[in-house]
Image (spheres, rainbow, N blue to C red):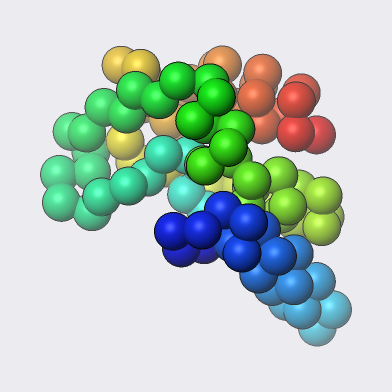
Amino acid sequence: SGEDPYLGSHMTRAYVHGVQSTGVLAVMKHWVFNSQETNRGLENSIVDNKTAWELYYPPFVAAVEAGVSAAMCSYNKIDGTYACSNHHMLEDILKRQMG
């Protein structure tokens, strides 16, 4: 969504509504902390909770609130565990806290 989480959140809501208004399912990606493409499978993101909620999560929260249909996880590790296998990020944060 870009460098600005506030603007990104507004753009995300509009995008999800626009896509899904045509009968196509919107997918949010890449959940979460996907900050580089080079060696993205080797990168390990370590982000504190305050920074995550203020900078990284807002566009994802906006997508969930807008009714996004699916999420695609990122390729990087988060605190040493690959994003697609990270129970805390998928179950606790995305599913339970965001909805």
